[in-house]
Length: 184
Image (cartoon, rainbow, N blue to C red; front, side, top):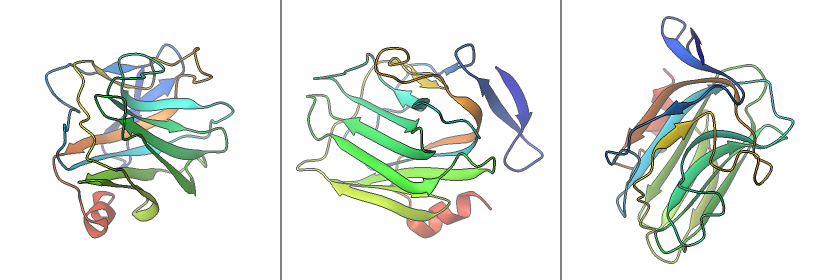
């Protein structure tokens, strides 16, 4: 993995070139919101998307039936998706953007969850909202990964080609106006 100019121009972004590039984060509880509110946010810049690409996730195994996970993927048409489920394999969330993020420009992506409602934003604009029956307990003692997925080569997912910057986890559900200020 290489470094390249980031979203602010003066910082450094992670530059992924496919299967060889990844970041693996530790398992000390980061990315485990449990039943609490959260926001996951990041900046993405890419032109690739001929297959589904792994962006950022916390997943122990592909086809995680009965286990907790969350993850962002870019679809072949350039839109971004977020999916998650609880520790019992229930309360599945699947949010997809309508905005395309594979146009070579920087885009800010964020997902929030407050109680049973989750929302996906691209560049500060609401893309999708869903509600589950109960508040999903999303926690798993497995590393977070950026640029690759445990599903690479299994379900059609491939490693990410592009840049990621400013990967952030908040223990609150940011408001739309707070999300809009992330990029400024």
